[in-house]
Length: 220
Image 1 (cartoon, rainbow, N blue to C red):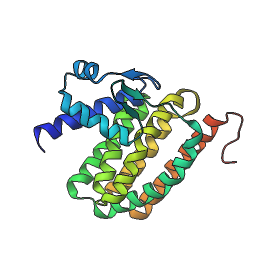
Image 2 (image 1 turned 90 degrees about the vertical axis):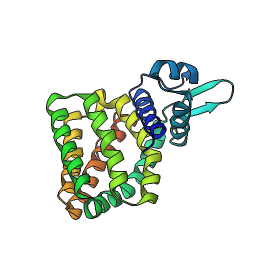
Image 3 (image 1 turned 45 degrees about the vertical axis):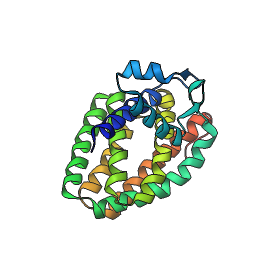
């Protein structure tokens, strides 16, 4: 990896976390110059990271005006979940079959991290492990087409969860479900990984329905 690629990845991770955890609020406009100064990363890596975030729907680049952090659209979350369920099941199975030994070690490390996040009820730790798990699954699937498709949904879904989890989510349970998915992949258990993926998406779907319509019962 080149030095510039490394800085671009750093810029992307930091900006994505700032957007997902609402440090950069939906509807706010920021300047590229302010981001360069605040993150102390060069203009080119920041610009490349912003273009990636724009492709993922988290920002809009407004010429001569700045960077607009997109609003959250709750009504579209269930549509996104329809796509995520199929893609994530495919990715989970592919990872369990195709992951390298080194990638399986990384999945086991995430299992440990998710256990710690669950036991300590640490939302930021969970969000960081979640981001790492998403990136690792995309990479370890060794399917560039599926990986590219799921990357367009990750940040939007993570931000929606972060906005609402304190009122509608069981964060320790969510962390355990992610950890179980990572464990099945690390164990090369393809059927188990598919089941773990579906259980995780069942939970996310329940959470989303309750968030969109608080009076609606689960799994209606």
